[in-house]
Amino acid sequence: MGTQPPIFPDRPFTFEQSTEEHRRAAEYLHIDRADSTATANGGSIALLIGIRHPERVRKLIIESAMYKRDWTSSRVLGFDAACDPESMPQELQEGLS
Picture 1 (cartoon, rainbow, N blue to C red):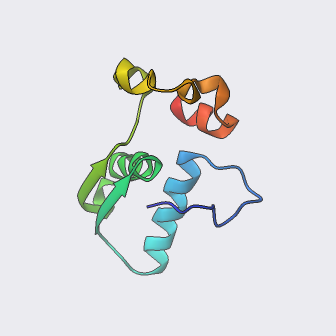
Picture 2: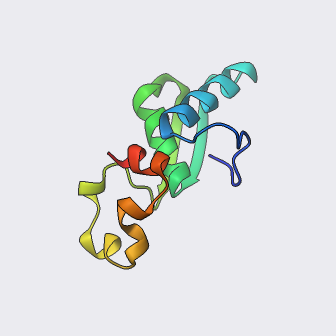
Picture 3: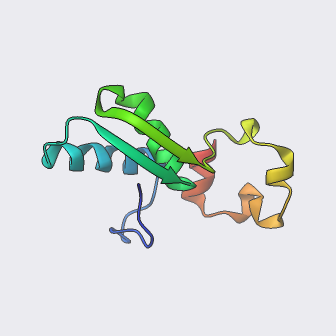
């Protein structure tokens, strides 16, 4: 799930946009249901696909995904000042709110 760098660098990244792009890609490729393995932001996208389009998901394997900031251990958030939302790109700040 997801790509780095983004395939469309001229458009802002949001988890919602990426979720919809994955759904459309699966539809275009005639993939009715899929197994997915995802990590970090890709894991957040996979969770959203599972929540918003459960009919498209057979299995999810998620590692190191954050869905809500307040569900995340303070040990994880406190390991580095870079975890402060104000230091993150705006689109990621919005994705965590």
